[in-house]
Every structure is written in structure tokens, then in C-alpha cells.
Amino acid sequence: MLPLNFNRLVYSAVRQIPRGQVATYGQIAFLIGFPAQSRRVGFALRNAPEEENLPCHRVVNSQGRTVPGWFSQRRLLIEEGIPFRAGGCVDLKRCRWQFDTQD
DNA sequence: TTCTTGACAACAG
DNA sequence: GCTGTTGCCAAGA
Figure 1 (cartoon, rainbow, N blue to C red):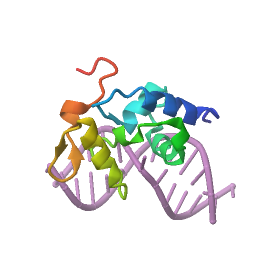
Figure 2: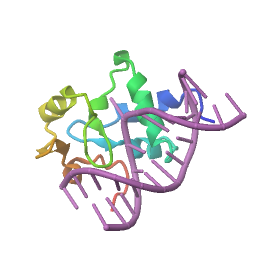
Figure 3: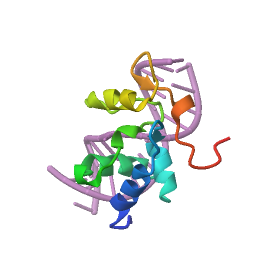
Figure 4: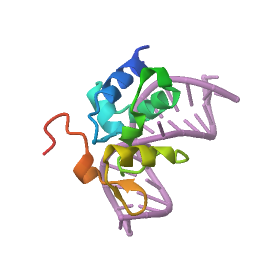
């Protein structure tokens, strides 16, 4: 069972994403201690209130794709300096948030 | 209680 | 590079 503050953990992690970088749902889930809860992360962000000041636009899926139906996200990322590739996916290879030893 | 769904991830072709 | 399938886990109908 997930703790009631699961969402809060997600918010905490997302808020720590540095400007100019992006994180995947899996990364967030792993960071807060629930590597298998990547889907919960997406659900939490969907419910995330704007008052939390969450840079949820910096969160993309493992393929570097943006949220379906949320076109503003792409523009927001571009304004932050996130390089986009043709097709509308972010260049994860260069912008992935490296909060820990990556490789 | 069972079945379906989801802002996903990993793997195969 | 992209699409399709499978697995994960909790919420909702």
C-alpha cells in the first residue's frame, strides 16, 4: 500500500528538477523509493495542483515524449532551454536529470 | 469482488 | 528511429 503522502513525495522530487533538465517518471518513482510506481507518478502529477509550483513539464516518459494532449509543455521546455528533436520528443541523452551516478 | 484503465517502462521486431 | 506487446500496481466502475 502506498503512503498517503505518496503524492507529496512526488511533488518533492519533481520540484528538485533543475532548470534546463528533464526527468522521467521512472526516475521520479525511483528517487522517492517506489521504482515500480512510475504510473502512480503520472497520476499524481495529473492531480497535482498548480499551487504546488510543480515543474511537471520537466517530467517526460522514458521515450522522451511529452504528455499527449498537453501541447504547452513543449513550448515551456523550449523556453527553459530543453533541446527538442524532430518528432516532438526531448533529447533525453543530453537533458536527462542526473541526480545520481548515471553511467 | 472482479475487470478495466492509466501524463509508464522495458523489450522485441 | 518508431510501433506493438507485456509487466507492474493502485484507483475507479
